[in-house]
Length: 370
Figure 1 (cartoon, one colour):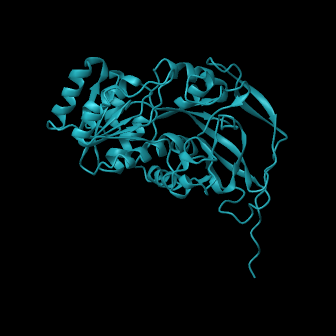
Figure 2 (spheres, one colour):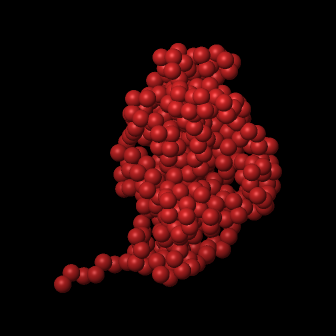
Figure 3 (cartoon, helix red, strand yellow):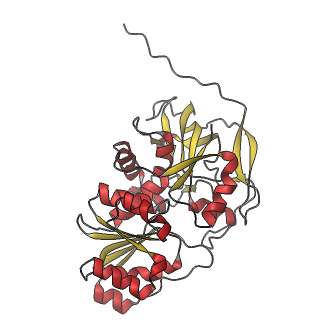
């Protein structure tokens, strides 16, 4: 009779380090220590090793999103792209899909918990879950060394994918993949990625061109042209060399006079949204991903008469669901998509946000939490 497999165990410290927003409203973080929590029923304790840094983290820290219901409080642990090792199971998690020692992600975009039972969840729309908990906003995020997570809502990481590469896929990857799917663009059709050189945009270029056989036009600052083209864009348009009218004319020229089948706005810019509808062909779709900060502004040029005449569509796309998270991680494991990233220590988070605020960041930053 074969010997039973030895269950893995880990030495779990009583205290651990986390990065908190110490002065919400401005760019400021500091490292604090917390007591290591015990996983409750249905939960797992994850020793996080890496966490991606997203533009939305900065919006939450600066309290610059007017659409959020409450201001961020001092001491909030931010982050929502965490990867680590399951160190302990809570009661009732013993027979679930993960076990101690598994490498998992927290989570599909910024949703730390979706109930799985409300009407949106039953239709695979996790991001609209009526009972959701948002990682890094009134719920502890992933800029920390240990975190609790629902055992049924962590995402297994493929063995062939490194943890630093997996982290950005849990938000930027799955978010852009889901948005491209929602656009209903077919292989061979033109898709525009606005903000193509950013953390989301450069992944959207790869997923669209290499994973979905779409023809990609990337729009961004000229300093990001080489990155965008390396990521699969056939055409790059430098936003600084056009006004709104000539930019739309150039899009029509590139696409044979018709326009693009879809525009995915990955940048948090009201101006990008105002330009987008002029890029679309008949029946085209604008997918809203980037969320501008400050006071909320309607999408300019969304005139009902033009929408009707051209049969244009506007869709919102908050996050992907669990199935899409697994699919995009597998895509990354196969080498179809690879995040352009650099790794920084926890102590550098404030500097990372400052660089992000100045619009200088290309690709993604991943924090090493070890």
